[in-house]
Image (cartoon, rainbow, N blue to C red):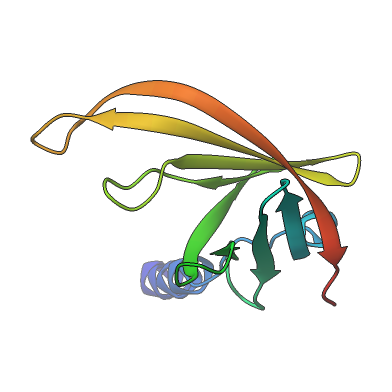
Amino acid sequence: MRLILLIIFILFMGHSGAQTMEIPNRIKSAFTGNWEYKTKFQTNTVIIKFELGKDYASFKDIGSGEAPPRTFRAQVKGEVLFIPAKQGLNDELEMEVIKGKLNLRAKQIIWDEMGNRMKTGTVETRIFKRTAKDK
């Protein structure tokens, strides 16, 4: 009897560990699409996509098109998408959709010479408008 219970327990543990977090459709619907931030001299474009079976969003920063685009993994934290800072690559990014607009907050991170995070600098917010919504 103990052996059967042990086998069932092991099978259950193996099955439960293979599942990934399913992102709610309301989050996918709110963020998915092409977003633009326009200034007098340039347009900054980002594309957000969710892939089936993935527990993150693909955030592609096309920018103004002068530099090659970069793609990041954005983690879902409640109603917000979050990209942690990586030295030499990107600042800490937090995105939230408010009244149909993408509010992107970039927190500047200050690093020491050893690559350790020292403190958070200024926070810059940009409001992007959706230009296309992917299905």
